[in-house]
Each structure stands twice: as C-alpha cells, then as structure tokens.
Image 1 (cartoon, each protein chain N blue to C red):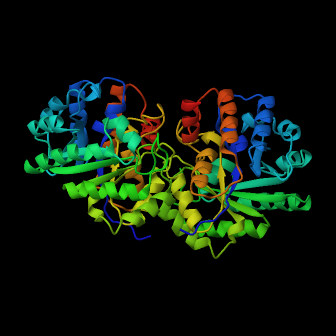
Image 2 (cartoon, rainbow over the protein chains, first blue to last red; image 1 turned 90 degrees about the vertical axis):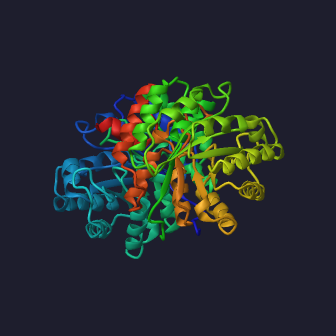
Image 3 (cartoon, rainbow over the protein chains, first blue to last red; image 1 turned 180 degrees about the vertical axis):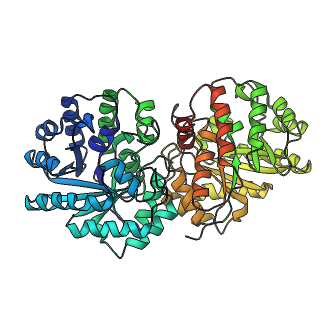
Length: 300
Length: 300
C-alpha cells in the first residue's frame, strides 16, 4: 500500500458535533474545550457556526466563542456561515477561514437551506466573494455526496458538476460529506477515481460518518487513492441527526489511532485529544460513542 | 478491487458472545435464539463450549443446548472443546464440528489454558485425533495473532510456526484471531501476504474484534487479499474481555451490511439477523453495541 506519510485532520466537533447535541453547553465551557483542543496538536478547528439561533440554538454564542478562545499560532480557526449575515459575524470575530455549505441532493438541500440547488449558488457566491475580498480562505462543504436520507442514491455526475461550480466560485477547499454514513469502500474508491483528475487532491477533504461502521474502511481506501485530508469530531460527538442515538461524524480519536498505528503522522497527541474528549463528555453528560473514548473510560 | 463474490460468515455469538456476558441466559432462550439464527441464512453457528462450568458458568448447559436446538439442513453446528473431557460432551451431543483453541503468545496461552504453548500441542493433538476418528471436522482458533494483552507485539514467524503445527495435526480450518482488536489494515495485509503461500485460503478464516473500530477496514484488506471466511457475533454480543464495556467480536450484522452493500453475497438475511439480535439483546437486558442494531433500535 502506497499511503500518504502525513494526514491533516480537521476537527469539526465544536461545530458539527455540538450542533447535534441537545444538552446546552455553557459558553465558558466551549471556550475552555476549544482551548484544550488547540493544545492537542490539531492544525485546524471549526469552532462554531454563524447561523441564526432559531435554527441552531446550541451555537447562538458563536461570536462570544470566536472572540474569546485563545488562538494558537499556526492553527486555523474556521467557522461555518450560511449567508452574508453569518459572514458579518465571522468577519467581526476575525476567524481565519469561513465555511459554506450545500447538498448534492435536491431534497436535502431544500430541507437544510430551504432553497433549490440552483437557488443556492448565488447566495454562496456572494459569501465567497465577500470572504475572499476580506482575505479569508473559504472551505466548501458538500453534503449527501454518497447518499441522501430523502432521495437515496445521488448521481455522481451531478455531484461532480456541483463540485465544479463550487471551485469556480473560488473556494479553496472542498469537504465531501457522507452525511448519513452510507458510503461503502467500493463506492468511495470508484467516486475518488472519477474525481481525481478533475480536482487537485490538496483541495479535497473527506468527511465520513461512522453510522454504519464503515468510516475507517472508507478512510483507508481514500488514503490508498492518495487523499490526505479528513474531517473528524472528537469522541464522535454529535451523533447522527437522521437516527438519533446512532453515530455521526467519525471520531477524530479513532481516526488518529488508526493512522498512527499504521505509521502515518497527524501531529496530534492522542492522549491530549482523549482528555479534551473527556472534558466535553462530562459537559454533555453522556458517554461519547467513539471506540477510543470507550477504552479511555474503562481503563483510566 | 478484485474481491470475492461470496463470503462465508461463521456466527460465534452463542459461544464467544455469551461466554463474555454476565447476565445468565435461560437454556430455553439460548435454544430459541440459536433456532432463530438458524433461519437467517447462516451456514455455520458455533453454538456453545464444552468447557468446565468452573471456567465459563455461562455455558454450563452446553449439552442441553446442543441436544435441543432444531438443526437445519446444510448448516454446520460447531462447539468449542478445550480437552478430551469437552470432546466427550461434544460427541455425545453429536455436533457437526469441534473447535480447539490456543494462543499465539505465551502469556495469553498460559492465562487462558494454564499451559505453555509447547505443553498445549499434545493436548490438542489428542482431541484432534479423536474427533477426526469420530468423523468430525475440526476448526482451530489461534488467539492473539496480531497482538497480546500481556506480551504486546507477537512475532509473525512464531505465529506461522504455530499455524503449521496446527495444520500438521490435521485441523480442517484455522481461524486467526485479533483477540484484543489491535490489528491495523497495514499489519493485516502484511501478515496475509506472509501466509498466503503457506496455507490454502479455503482453510483460513479471519476473526476480527472491533475494539478500536478497525474490524471492517481489516475485513476489507482481507477481501482484497482473496480471503472470504470471517467470524462474527450478532450485534457485537460479548464485548471485550480486556476492557469491559468496549467492543469485542465484530458484529455479524455490521459485516453483512458492508458486504451486501459492496455487492458481495453472504446468503444471510440482514433483517432476520437483526431480529435475532434484538431477541438476545432483550435477554441480556443491555443494548448490543453494533451499528446495525443501533439503527434498528432507533428506527423500528
């Protein structure tokens, strides 16, 4: 196996994780937690989302969190923004990077953004232009790339067309999401074979969910295809919004354990990561679902 | 990827799963459960262990279970036997196949069997001879192939030597166990590359534990190497004896889901399997850890 020697992990727990937790977390605890994550060796943390509190009340303190965390040198702090209003907040808080998002399937896009895919482009374009004009890098998230909870299978050519539209807008990186955790390793390998000559590998991240236990197998085939950027959520925080109680984001710690065990560097200290996982686990008052947190709990 | 079109799954839940559950299960419930499993399309079930009740009280009703289940045609019913005494019971119950076991690491073998590896061979040899003389097929289990909870790393050449000794005894099949779930995909691929010219693939099964979430990734690399026999425990029943509460055997249902989704046949009906998982889940009075059981719970 000819695998990358170094992998970059993008921690999305404080945004993608917390937005799916029902327990209300105090702003000061979020700040302390992100500060802990900043000292694990992570090079990227998505710290919050500047979305209207009506939609995601869990992250209504976005501006306070973004302004109050202690920023470590060399670490990129990003925030999700759905529109110009959200971008204002992100710029006011001076995050390093903003993330925009849409879905690869019509029904999921409509449920999530209340717009058709075609109606979504101009909204995102405005945000990207303004963000780039303010010297921010922009990350795109494309959801339901490997399957949709409403539409089922998603046409691969449609996905590629949307990716192109997003890159044409000027985004710097695109994170391809298996939003409901249905991708299997053959599907992932086939899809990556389709796109590897379309988009540079240093602009594509894989965002796997572990809902059906295949996230690490999917990571493995992605590594074999030469991809080296992966999203994760500490401890698997957040769960699956489509099957409450089931797993969502692949756990950063499970990802890090496997990569290190295979001799691939991440720059992350697993023990520090697990301690940060334990901190937020106590705040949400629920055991986190990851394997590593599970072992940490039983043996520490 | 050039993968096998058909995979044979060997269900070890009634033995390997139940022996690690603390809840006492009524004999009649075990029988009903195995009868349910027999109707899922499984071709192999390890139904119990004829080990002294002092060591595994959970399976003290081995003879009753083995004699009372309804045996389906074409399905192999196996039982674990540690020694001649155990074999007597298995022969009396007329199981189709007996399984013997030892470890690839000295410390684990000593803790488990109370003998050194060298002292173990003659005991197993006697069992194999007698079983073969009684026209039974014999399966070997080799534990701690990819790592030992006491000795750490296990020398690959030592593992291969033990495999050879076991095949020389006349066993029909050998199941290679990642007893503590530490194997990573590179390690598995390297090890399989070492043994593929030593032993025929139709005599080697892989027995992965999902303690660190890598079981399906390890299954994938095994499939890529052309191996097509895997052990599993419905719902992940049993957990990890070395980190209570953590996962043990890979869940048969998670395995089946991934294989079917990749277009690989198993002959197993996943919905029937999940119903059988739900039955035993209620008896052990604890949610089973598998992803599929989790989704089944949340959506049914």
